Image 1 (cartoon, rainbow, N blue to C red):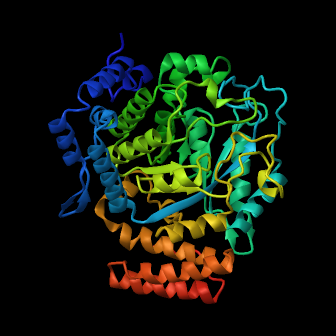
Image 2 (image 1 turned 90 degrees about the vertical axis):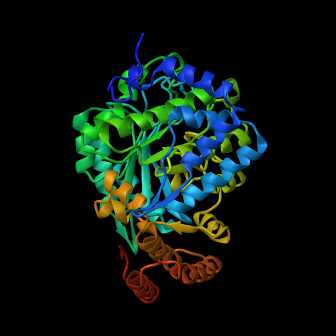
Length: 482
């Protein structure tokens, strides 16, 4: 039997089956243990120190107790705490991004994904470099500055050289005032050498969803193809960090396996990265199984209610206070709106989950990876966020200034967000308003920026941000950053 060891580099030891089962048992036994629950909540609260606001975070076992707790007033307390933590470290900024699907050729047999190799009626597509250029221009014309590129696993159609060529093409395109300033990459687990190549290509975050941490379920859900190798997939983040990528993004596909198991496994993975590399995940994503071509989510008997899904988001935020949290257009406007108050700090907008989808006038469905629930335009999403009191941010400054990995985390922990990320968000929002927004969104945004500038504590930073924003409004000068 494997022994639990967060410092181990072996998947079965840092994601230990027996430890997860014991954690679930412990959480169930203590879900009404009020003294314990109160002590866990107290541990998690933000505390003012000489170096700024600090949060202790929670272990996977402590967080699992909160997740199991069904005492209504304690659940409400968790939700308030999750929002307090999010505001303490990320403020009211919401980072915007869009996925870009390069290719849906795939040799894996994942039973929950329409790209699986046995699906013979899905339209297989792969973007040429000219196709990438057209998609990027379409995304720039919407106002996007940050992309997450996606591709199926296929060494013939989608080798690392193709991915690198696409990244180079994306960064090379300057259209009107548009530019993609950060490319995050969501591709299959690969080698240390290939991660080095991705780092050299200037990627932002490397994202890889575990899908499920339950090894037996994982093997059954991935019956064929290279993704069948549980250990190779689960240990990918260690190879990425060895290859120099210090911003990595975790996630599970909720609904494939019991949520308690996935929740504990996800937090154990975060603890492992912290224990071995000194920095946890840059982001955690929370996708749920959704309908798609050849995929019926009802065949998976672990689906989550919206209420339970929201509770999971809140508990993740409390457990990993400094980690960015992402929710996609898989979820409806209503679910996303609630999730924003529980810790989400990044959302996608106007997403097309099909290869070549952004250049199609009508949303294509013949090659979508999943059905999109929130189908609003980016302008509508931006205006909606501002009406809720959030700042839609297109900022990529930390990545381009080298503030990644532990350097970003130290910025986050030091409380300098209001003097750095806040003005950067306002300046990139000003760019969006001038270059892309509808008149109503533009008016709402300029009023919001005027109010939010006053929240910048440092007088010099506030004055400089005001000056830069005036330049953005009156000229074609762009890309100011702190």
